[in-house]
Length: 194
Image 1 (tube, rainbow, N blue to C red):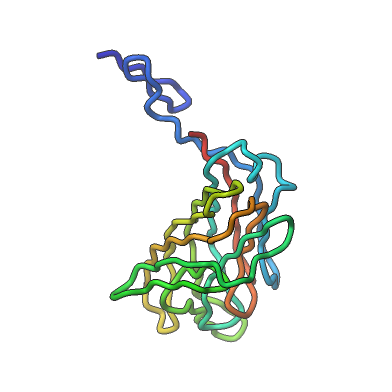
Image 2: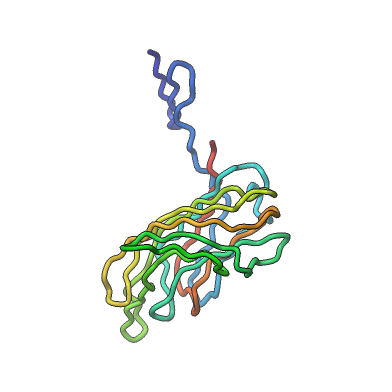
């Protein structure tokens, strides 16, 4: 058995590359004032253009302007946001938390809090979402996880997965809230090297 380690993190086992899940940073958006949504589309080289089969968006330190909101995501086809009822998914929590016939992906069962005191916002949320199957005649798929504080300032963990039931190629994604705005946070887009 021959194992070769490389400085870039790759591992060869008997000549086979067994560790190649490298991330390539494609873009980042940092919010520092009131913003309704964060959008990534194919104007970013390497995004949803066939270069990578899987993409990752990591969101960190996100704060919201209004208590009791759901983080959500939608997809685009031919530059048009899809707001039809073809979204379905599941959110991890006690009991059955599936949804179908929805107009967007929903990441949590409980709403996210913001625990404000005057102009100070104490709570934020962070997480990540992977997505794939963005080509024509495929079902756009997501899966991810996030940590947040609910409206009672209790720590929450949410695993989530979903599928958009369209048949056209997807060319963008939008992150937003059920209502209200982001006031802080960073969203970083990666291509995942298979």
